[in-house]
Length: 193
Length: 193
DNA sequence: TAGATTAGAACGACCGTTCGGTCTGGAACA
DNA sequence: TGTTCCAGACCGAACGGTCGTTCTAATCTA
Image (cartoon, rainbow over all chains, first blue to last red; front, top):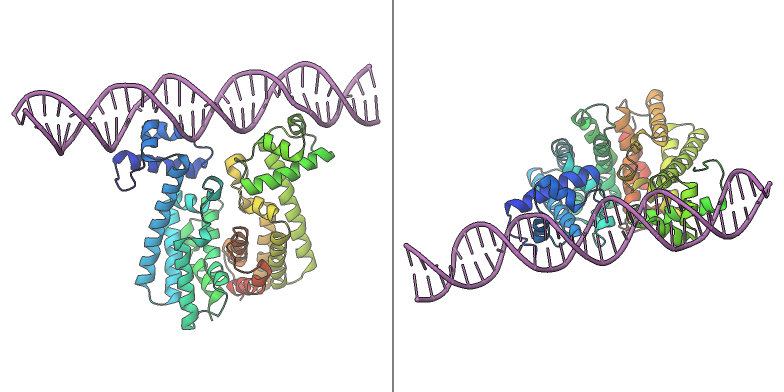
């Protein structure tokens, strides 16, 4: 059984290696044997901590989403206005993409439903709900135009997310922070009153 | 050898089936045997028309990109101002996502570098270049603020693309056309002077 | 008939998973 | 304290199945 609570050393070694390999080669191009070789861990250890390959990927995904949720909650708590919150969220996403591209790639790039059949799409996740909450607050306060919330969320953060994708694809000519101010400005102009 | 030029009946049967299966189950969850069964075609036929599974996926991808390029060129030719072009492009993308979700899914959803190692990212494709050309024209004419072109492209079309992703994930509450006007409006406000 | 096309059995390689086993630390007992 | 015992942690060879690909023969077509 996967001991969800206990964080043994091997368990996190496995998760770290899996994140690296999954995000670089993709889920289907990474075998359990690969993970074991790279992590210096036996096959038995993997199957001791995780029910199977799917469950390993899912544990990783839940981990990433949980971290993301904490960070976003924090931002909402630290900033009062919708405008400041949007700017801070985009800055955070850019920073995360710079520091931990593997996390970003795993969250954005992977087609999770291909290997986690019952996985909900990103659009129904808790972090996404926080983005929506941020925008809906702006609409209520009159800072944001009375748009459909889904349209407003994507208008506000879609550009930033796409910029991050370009960054991860190595297509961007400049380092990511170079585009931060303009991206924030466009995002706010798209939805502001 | 793959007879790239000749369009035999079987070849397009194979391509159609591959598109359907790839876009629903994903590349790695679709075997050549699956395609043969569904298309009512023999394995030999597949390997007569395509060098291997990768090449089949690549042929499909090139096909889709070519169609996309034709459609976008057409739009640029039919509309004079940047504003009208942006609106028309978003309307076209929405229409395509509604009529041929499989094409859209295959282009947007698939992680092509996972099975086409040397594939260029979408950000370097011809259709993307056309989007950029549209925006750069707007900047030159003074209709669009003098932004970095990459930021402006993503600000203009990122929201629309994300809305389409939500639609393909089945997360949208209303049918896609319901969101068209607001999406166009947000896009233009993000970049206009 | 020559060449293009289609058929499908067969093969080898890989991959996820299983399972019988070893090791270790500490609880229970004398 | 010394001994026994056990459960959780970890190991890795082996298995069964699938998949991409090959190959030879059959069939069509011009």
